[in-house]
Image 1: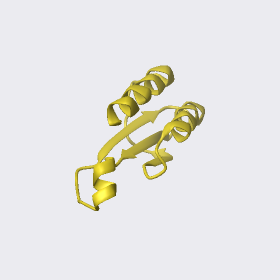
Image 2: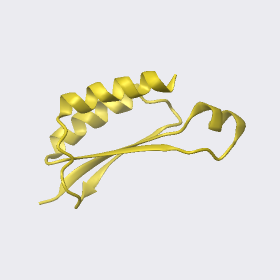
Image 3: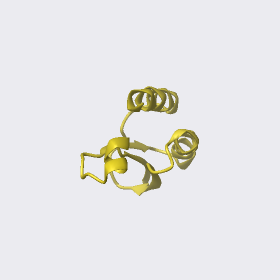
Image 4: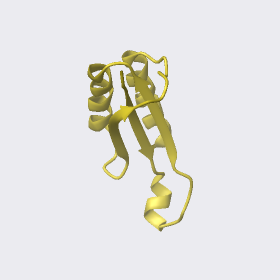
Length: 83
């Protein structure tokens, strides 16, 4: 049975504004069911900056062990740190 990965890639605004090659931040969470992955994916799509990237795809990686609620809460904190 395949797990589902939600991958979020955040690019700092300074790098986008000046065209510099600075470090990007990547976060990938793996869930057991498609419904859990879609719930987190939808929250992230609503809150991400338009130049950041959010992907959802099947994966053979082990589960990350994070609940949907914790993943959604941590995204809001991560977005606040970005500003």
